Image (cartoon, rainbow, N blue to C red; front, side, top):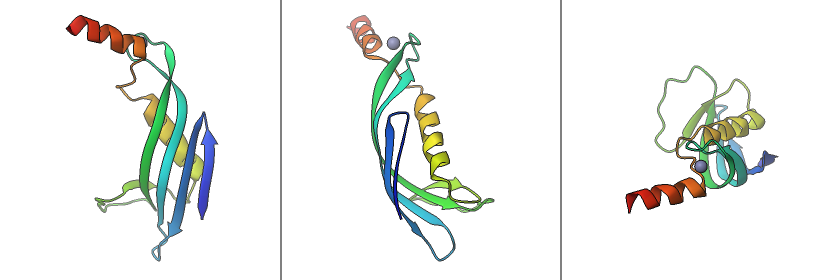
Length: 110
Ligand SMILES: [Zn+2]
């Protein structure tokens, strides 16, 4: 099944395959520009995202371990929720620093 979803400026483009155990393998990319808040000056700025994703959607509770895939526990496959939680984690990334703050830091150090 092909996935093509856009939310808050980010597009999830991926392929999903159902395994014989009822799990879903989702591989693809998240791309786009999303508005995030700078952790230093708290001003919103656009962050460019270009990320490969490799998810395995499993039914909870999941006690396994997977080296190849990021595990997502869902009772039922919900692509919207996956994209939303990706957006959430991008927004909460402590490395979200706007360009003017990066420049400032650079000037302080040299
Ligand atoms: Zn800033």
